[in-house]
Amino acid sequence: MRVFKFGGASVKDAEGIKNVYDVLQKVGYEDVLLVVSAMGKTTNALEVVIKNYFDKSAELQSSVQEVKKYHNQILLDLFEDDKNDVFQAVKLHFSDLDYFLGHNKSPNYNFVYDQIVSYGELISTTILSHFMNFMGIKTQWIDVRNFIKTDANYRDAEVNWELTQKNISKNVKRKILNITQGFLGSDENNFTTTLGREGSDYTAAIFAYCLNAESVTIWKDVPGVMNADPRYFENASLLNQISYREAIELAFYGATVIHPKTLQPLQKKEIPLYVKSFINPLLKGTSVSKGATLEPFLPCFIVKKNQLLISLSSIDFSFIMEDNISEIFSLFSEYKLKVNLIQNSAISFSVCVEDKFDNFKELNTVLSKKFKVDFTENVTLFTIRHFNDKAAEMVEKGKTVLLKQVSTETMQIVTRDN
Ligand code: ADP
Ligand code: ASP
Ligand code: MG
Image (cartoon, rainbow, N blue to C red; front, side, top):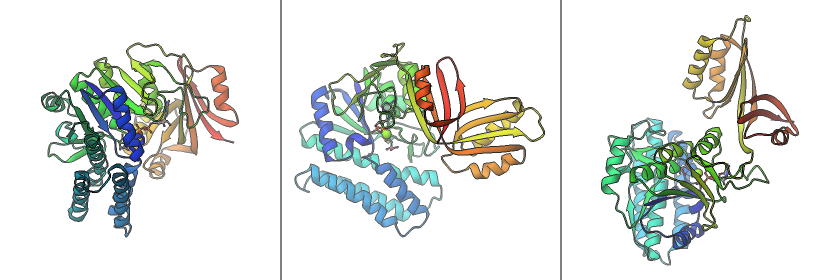
């Protein structure tokens, strides 16, 4: 069996959905399982709904309306008349959402988040599945929540592999085009959970692992994995092949083209991963497999913007030792700051972190009681795998370098724009 993942960008409008059909015509669809994300930026739009819901904002209804309108337009563009069953099926999902918004009593933000955000994927797969049937491809729509079981850690749920494996081996039909939702799962009480933003790649890997799939292909708006994000680097080149290890490193340092959790299950069973263009599906793209040498061998660049560089030094010139460091780290973890780089000297300790939840201000008051705290906001962290002088020069040009760290394979540079 082959597992394909189509992300939000590939199904952002009617053209995109028609293109998925064309891709399937070109590469075959028998014995395939499709994992599909919410359409375009729907997850972000549903996050606005969630915010309005908790803020008891007057905008709640209009934000829901926007999501409805967006999908409705896609339906009208795809189907000749509104007699197709899909209109009813999508309407049903939206009335479930309305019902939830009207009746929910849980104050648990993360729980509510997952219940609401899941409609993005439920609706996209409903539309896609009906469209394939409309075009003559028979499909099996499956509710992923009956397959991927997780704990109840809403918004970042952990997979229960044993149960998931059982469900998938027993109930996924072969020899048919299966269509299911990325990103979602369900807990012991059958409430919806999610696997973390951008988690649909991971869903594809979970199915591939449990099905002993022949391969996973993630279809992207880029030709494959490149040696840099083409949005930021004009001369980015396609990497024809990379090893699982290289892919894990790139994803870990922040190359958003593959979700970091995706690689581990694939690598365990040596299932090859292909990253290909949904615009040119017959091109080879990137192949990720065991021990593959990086080809072509080029420096790879990863950019993380909006980072915070924090420097802590002891107030009385005492050393920063294991016990301070462990205390500092547990504070970072408690305040949900993601540490992307660490450097320490005898009396100071610097970290480059991401403050996704805007917690630094509060943390700073705690840290300031024990340390002298200096920080610079809005810095950029560049990571160069397989660096050389030219690559470093290119990154540093026109910027102020605040910190630099070098290991055998990787150079990290924190910069501020001049
Ligand atoms: P999806 O539609 O599957 O969610 P994403 O938008 O998450 O797709 O991922 C594709 C994007 O990843 C590309 O448009 C590109 O800008 C970005 N990207 C970041 N790093 C890389 C890289 N090294 N190679 C290719 N694309 C990259
Ligand atoms: N729709 C989800 C998100 O935007 C999951 C995904 O696209 O992978 O985060
Ligand atoms: Mg994505």
